[in-house]
Image (cartoon, rainbow, N blue to C red; front, side, top):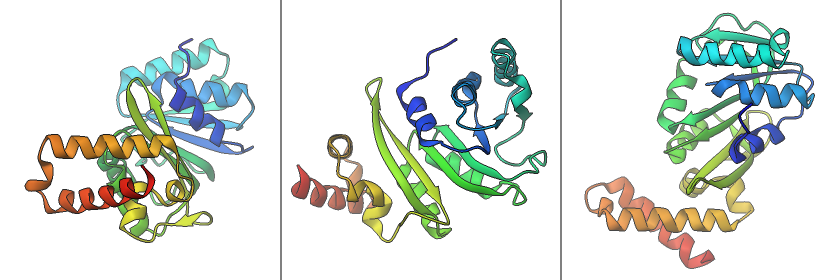
Length: 222
């Protein structure tokens, strides 16, 4: 069985429930297998948009004798009508923030979900902006450095957590700003270098504003 990556392990460690979990983009059922073997949930819905990765998911679950504790669904995001019970946690990872927003916008409104864990590969700020518009709050955020890249884990709920109040919260994360980490500082420095080296602020007003926010942050925390 393929070893769990650092970021997937962090996702699993955030989940402590006797209830149900959805994993959108199940990645060979690695998360489901970890959660079920460690008794961190009782059931996992694995969702894939293509038949081949769904087949791999099912195959791995059969090999681990866990297929009876899962439902494995071929579907685009959360548009399925096969999830009728209440969901404790929904995981959406391994795609850009824009794609995650699109999944949320087109989700079946009948699916009841207590909290989400997102890991956007890009545009975490666009995801937070959408979450703010829908009155989500941040329970926890964590920045993981793996394979020479930074990944942002964002755990949210409408019932508890820290409000996303302003542009700094959108860009850096409200939980991150209350718990400044070396990875947050390094990620911000890396983003600054990327903007400046590619002159992105000269052609885009939003990125120019972002760079000003970054400069203020670096001045305070570097």
